[in-house]
Image 1 (cartoon, rainbow, N blue to C red):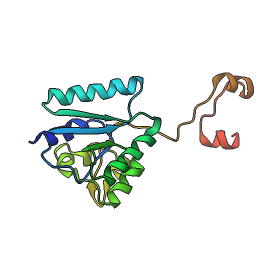
Image 2: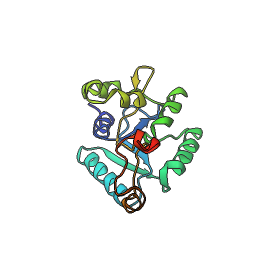
Image 3: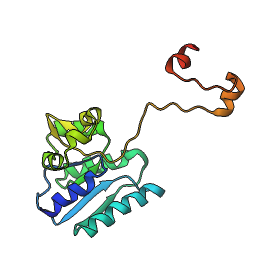
Length: 174
C-alpha cells in the first residue's frame, strides 16, 4: 500500500476531507489544508499528525486560521486556480458536492470498500460523502445544526421549570 493510501486510511478514521484530483497518486508527503487552529481543535489535529508520522507519512500542515473554514476555502480556491491544490482539505459536506461536480475530487472507493463504509456509515451520512455513487470524502467529526438548547434559568422562570419534551410542545405549547 502506498504512503498516500495509508494516509487516506488514517484520516478516514475521522475527517470530512476531499482529495484534489491533480495530486500525484504516489506523493511522499501528505499536505492537509485545514482550519482547526484554535485550542482543542489544534490539539486534535496534532493527534492525527502524529499518527500519520508514526505510520511513516511525511505530514505537511497547511493550517489556515479563521473560524468556520471561510478563510481556508478562499485559500483553497486560490491554490486550485494557481494549479497548486493540497492533497487533502478539511471541508464542510455541502462544499464537497460542489468540488465533485467541478471534477476536482478523487474517488475514495478503495478505502471505503476496505473499511466497509457502506455498512458502518449511516445512509444519511453517506449521502454527504458520496457523489455519483462514489465516495469522495470521509467523515471526520459531526456537527448537528438542528440542536435546540434551553436556558434552564429562563425555563424555570417562564415555564414552571419544565423544558419542552417534543417539537409539538415547543411549537404549540401542548
